[in-house]
Length: 89
Image 1 (cartoon, helix red, strand yellow):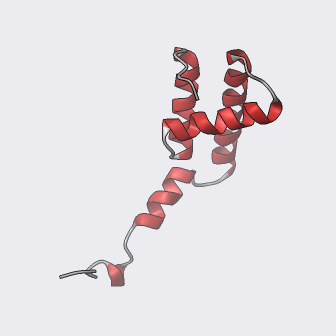
Image 2: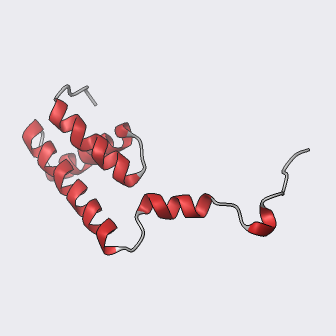
């Protein structure tokens, strides 16, 4: 995957990565794969695909009472009975 230096495209991918709690490269890869499936190779179509993914993700977050990042944070919290558990000592 060649490096694309378009600031607007990278910004959309960064926002997508932030909303999905993934890395920027994973977000770019997701857009690249979707563009390849559709047979589109130009930068403008990739921007449109990334923007549609971002809008879809933001719409899903507003439909849910808790965003994906907040639910992930909730899963990482220790339960009361497990907070003093040590794996190794």
